[in-house]
Length: 491
Image 1 (tube, rainbow, N blue to C red):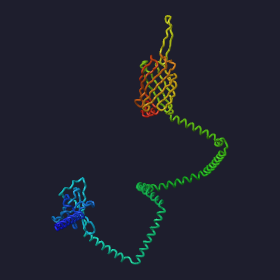
Image 2: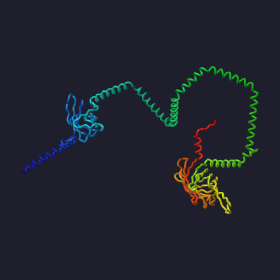
Image 3: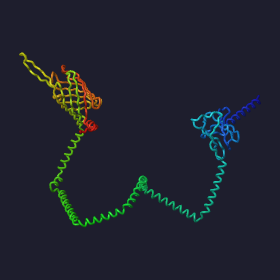
Image 4: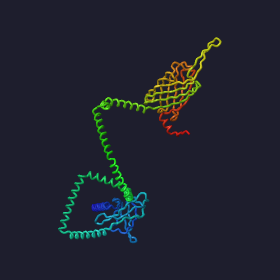
């Protein structure tokens, strides 16, 4: 029983050692285990020298499978590649043999191809193959190149004796000194050289752009001079002769003119000296600083006046309204002067059909009868307005009587809510109280607006709703309209 137990232990130990060696062999050799899964791809190559079965397959330097089997079919090597199951190859995958070192060991390198191609399946063949480096041919070429280098070295050694070597050494030293000096000059004159090169570049560019035309113009000038040169020389000779004769004939006159110019120059110099000393009326004015101060003040005031006129905005407003309480139409014409955004002046004319009442007293059959006749009247408006953001307050003459009002602007001044109070003494026809009006103006288009509201709120016998509209222009609008209108010519 004891002997059997010892043999069993030895057998188990042997099986364990064989298992460990088998595992280490497959692990170190990167060989797949029998139970590992994968798929097989075929590849045909003309020469696979140095590649054996169980050789590694690498993609981007990473192990991706092994060469499972190599067969010779019709003079070509047919390889069965066992690929790891997680590796995907596509139709345009490429295979090539590469050396793993200088000893000649080779492995099969693959590229996966692009994913937009169809994936290779189990049993399909890689079509594209890369170039294979032939180590023997490379070694032969290196040996031949080494022979050529040896011959070249011998020829050079034979060409250069001691004298030539000394001359070559001296030449190299001179070149070194020259390079050093040139480097120093370039460093000390870097900025001027850069400027010079920039100017030369600009000159070359301009010459390249204008050179053909310049040469053509010079050719034309040369041709013209060749054709007209003799005649021009003759003309110049005649002009010089005539000029000489004129100078000879008017020598005395020229001399007198020069003397007169000297006299005038002396007089001007004397006048300038007197002005500089402050003599005479003009000299005193030049010496007096008050004249300059006065001119400066006048110029400053004139500048202010011109500035005010330049900022002045002028608006013209004309409208008509129908009052349901009076059954009459009423017309308005207003002129607004706005020197700045915070204040403005309103000047207007109103055509009021019930503007005044004429009272006539008659005695009929012993009884006194008072008759009132309402007549139309032209009334005037003159107001001063002060604006506080969207609110404006007005005061002044309204329809020829004292009055005041307020405006509230909205929608960027497109709309206005207004309240007006005037005729505080109730002098209008059939009026017992002051004239109070409230309404809204709204601009439909750039120049057209409408208005509506309640008129004569305090006087019930004249109270009514008014509706109307009109046009509003600014001075620049007139310039635009008249500038765009066609010219009208009278026959």
